[in-house]
Amino acid sequence: MDWNKTKTIFIIVFSILNVFLYLLYINRYNEAQEVEVLGETTIEERLQADNIRYESAPENTLKESYVSGNIRVYSPEELKTLDNQTFEIFDRTELVATFKKPVVLASLEDPATLKDFVNTHVFEGSSYDLYEVDAKAKKAVFFQTINNRQIFFNQNALLTIYWNEDNEVYRYEQTAFEKLEDDFEQTENLLPDEKAVEVLYTRNLLKPNSTITKISLGYSTLVQLTETQVFAPTWRVRVELQDGSKEDYFVNAVEGKIIEFNKESEKKEVE
Image (tube, rainbow, N blue to C red; front, side, top):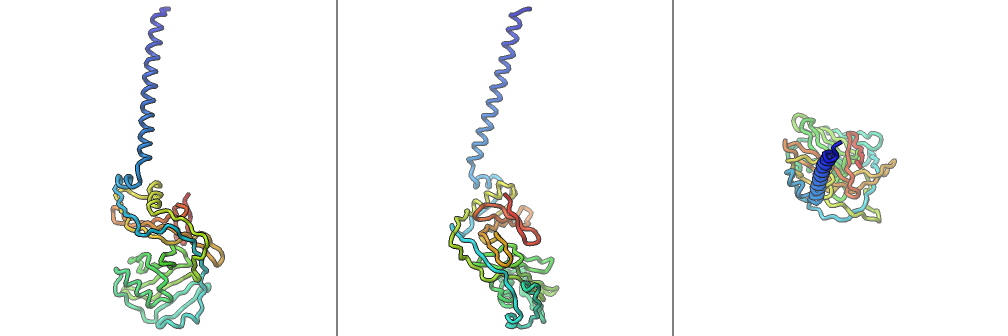
């Protein structure tokens, strides 16, 4: 055996192995550096990189308490004050009103017009705020409010008005809470709206080339008992996509959990 030749082969092999290990180290080091740089990138910079336009909410609320309320029970006697309407009450908690003579809506495009109609013609209509208009289905959905903030997608805090081909409202359906109070002694520190946006972004829910058009604070159901419910402060984030369509996202403003509502107006929290 030629030991000199064997020794030379081993030296070459080990040299190649050393070069390979060195290159592997360099690659992993560079990857670690890239991850570190990415981790230091602010949420504003990442949004800008994906061309997601966003302005912070005007609210500067730092603390809020939870809110509780009882499901409202309607009685025929309290409804006698409204003219031009007949009423039906289902399960004591759902009010369905039909106009004897339908009432014309001056405009379906102006939210203020719809709000004025509700304030004037709907039982205790001033306690509701417009959520969305479905022109195709000829209806508008309102959420009940407390402290001028909406209770999101609760089946016991909804108002829906319906109109015909002539833009005449002929019926509305209504549920409500009563004794809505923020009487909890303990107040909670709220996550800033920027944190809600960051939560949505890290879950890949915010698409590139979109615009966050509105961020507002409301409430979502936290605890649901037989007649009483407790509501938690919740951020609503409205996003307009590149194609012009709109999406709404909801984030618990205390815990930072994403809330998803289903068609039955119930919700689940995404860890």
